[in-house]
Figure 1: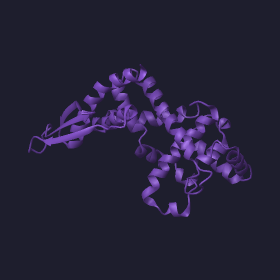
Figure 2: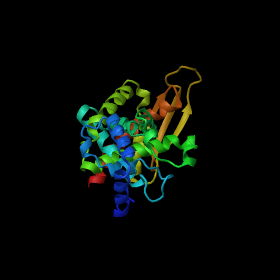
Figure 3: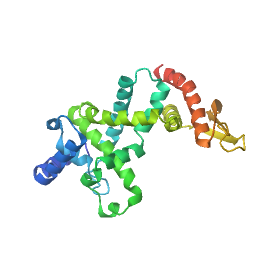
Figure 4: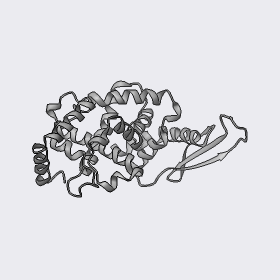
Length: 256
């Protein structure tokens, strides 16, 4: 595990004794656009690119856990700095898209993570799990970069460019604002109970912008409703209303 000296020493030895792997990792950070490669801890980066299917003892699970937190913080800092007038609800909805496994898997493919990720032969044949492994590896790499400097200085310069591109895409397509995910994240942080949606078709006319009507309840109380041309959009509008009502209340209670 990451906290064990034996694992760290083993990774350091693996890098030192394998110039080819060192060269691969150097190419990898160059592809990412890391601005200060000399600050990277190569032993941690090597471990971040070892899937659990390859090794039960030395793998990227702990780094993935840390990287998940680093990713969310990096996304929040980016949105706050770049879009200071964006509402908290909208930032939460956009961030939920930026940090989703689907987004991470796409980014990992763009950076060719598969070339550097060590997995077992059986996992290599499991195409269904490929996206999940890539998303996990992406978070683990962020964890390794964070631990290298104890801050986000090795992450923001290259990842913010991706955040900017993705945020513009999301802002230009309102249907991609994932308020359902943002609401679920908010309520899960407060309790184990999840929001519950009900949807009713109130128009039989195709193309009607208010064909479906959705309501969302949390802890037995109605918090939002909305209409839309599809079930998904109606639920998103209900979730947006619920989030905007619940977020201030939950935040106040959490800080009190």
